[in-house]
Amino acid sequence: MATTRLSLTVDEATKKEAIELFEQFGVDASTAVNMFFKKVVQTKSIPFDISVNDSNRNLYYMSNDEFMNRIQTAIDNRDN
Image (cartoon, rainbow, N blue to C red; front, top):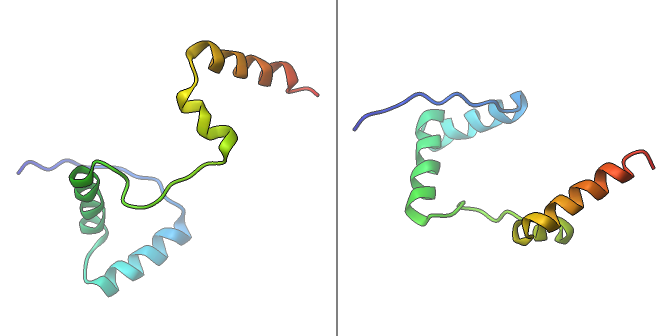
């Protein structure tokens, strides 16, 4: 199986804590990230809940015109 490098940026404190936990699990960071990627591919989903507030949740379902109107409203109101 071919491999590739992946460069990630993470919060330093979070990385330190995660590395310590990975060691307790008996895996390194590369193995943990590979496990995450494989689970995403296997389930075709993020393997934990992700949510946003209701006002932002609808952005995904908006038409392009609705989205652009919301952007324009935000621009018009930015100095208020």
